[in-house]
Image (cartoon, rainbow, N blue to C red):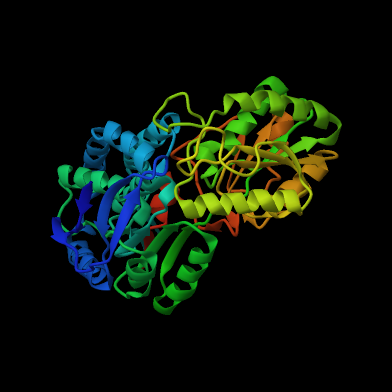
Length: 472
């Protein structure tokens, strides 16, 4: 078992002042992988102070210097790709086929952000006025467990490109991922104090970052309730915030869709990362006239979504991250049955042959948009199929949600699909599959959050404009 008792502060691995211990558990087996010593408010304050000192010099670095740092980080994280992928499967239960893609995508954010920074104007002038964009200050970055290393890459890339220094409060459920990332930062030659990392709980380390007046900006990925508290508590010190708070993504299946392609694709985006993904398309809106054909296609395609060892490349659905998350998903499956949804596949309990681990049966319901399973983010492999009458009804149902992070449209008439996509209240819509673009904005409408990440949009979130007017 690995023991982790240090934080990364001011370019050094320092022993934790906090003494609370927590175990990191393999969700597929229950094995204890590591014991971590959690930081406290004093650790957070030390990291913030280091970032504040480093900001004086780092905020004045040139574009070329920041791009060089981003490129070094890209190489350093890529060098640890195999380690990170293996840790994803053990520490979090992320299936191998998904983990490898996400780890590579995370490293790629450094390269993509360097490109965005190179092309991004940071000064503009007219007449006797000059406007410059400079770093907002010390940034606090708080990441979620479902893609901890990716979120660390994404947020650090944007903040560093802007000239901010950082304090990271990573998910306490992802300490082994975090350790590899910290080692990569150290190997990349990040100047002391520019990146600081404190393992700890949101109620201690995260709360100190939010209330500390030396932190100018918070970038958070996680639950809506925590996001609301960050916005509320951060107001006392006028914190700038970027909040990515999850979703309940609609997937509109057009009446001209090829079901042999669209249904496996729709199940893939629903069970993305074993359903533990904010972008998962967990509301499948289908034409009522095609409902029976859709149901038959779902039953046929479900055999492809095997549950098993997340390290096995053939596995499509791994375990939930914890016992608590397993119980949460079971509760929603029960709720779907209680509210009268028709069970098309899966159901309560563990899959056959899985007495150990936090494994869930991939579940598909036929229901209505007012059911709890269609309103709330479950964060597990649970899909709700919802019939619609026509295109207008599909858009009405898609937008009848508190969330607006991501959406999908599947159909063969591309022009019609684009017309539908343009009417959906979501920060990103993908037509016919799952795609990513590190330069396109990422973020949501409504309760899915505030602000945008990725590329120039992400860098802008860590910048403040200053106008200088000269009287002549």
